[in-house]
Image (cartoon, rainbow, N blue to C red):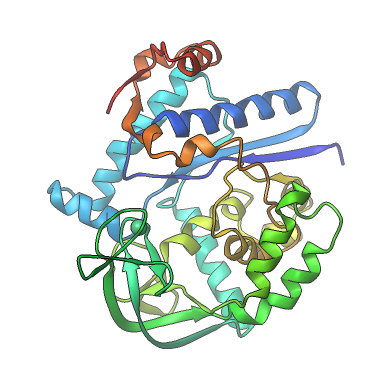
Length: 330
Ligand SMILES: [Zn+2]
């Protein structure tokens, strides 16, 4: 088979319109895809949107819209910007797409069949801003109230029955993978990642009983699948789902050639692990530098105006010099 290259951006959460960070990440991925196509490689470039979760449910309610209508509105803005900028993606995936839903259900059933999922009572803290669980060590006290250090908003106490993923059972498998040459790039991130896993992995809550906007758990529709697990599966969904990635030669080759987006997220080991449940090669701790911008709060204060997104490369340079015609205050 010819050389293959599969590049993905993060799928963007639809609580915001495209901003400087999303634009930057997508432009970098576009340049990589164009380079590999020009070299004659079989190339697949995926971007899209992450649309489920409690935060979206709330925003839509505040705007008197259904969650799907709200998402449709934001997605139209993303597509408009990418069209104007000439972004050459092969697919724009949405986590509300029917084939993605089928792929997430298939992944869930696989994990369940392997004995990696169990049900238990959960009592913990949740930040809706992060759509994430927080431990005692992760929250900070402000005026006697426990708040998320990122969002500066009180975390919510959640007591409900949840499904859990047996993350703790995978520490040794992960550590063995990290020892493979080139598995973690750059090498300088290896200690950090390894130490995180060595310090102990807790099982992960992977469903919500009080949230409705999501993909229902197969055979238990009173629960929806946790938004991060749902979103992470998109890289498999775009190749046809887990069965195709395991059995179809083209999907297999592309999965093996996956160049994950440069994201550098602190939850990396968990996300890598969830990827492992599918098959094969997992993400690498590549280049926090490249998309550091994405996580700078300041970048989110600017949205991209589609009228100015044309000629993206040139305008990006302008943006770095601070004379950006493509930016306007959000
Ligand atoms: Zn938060």
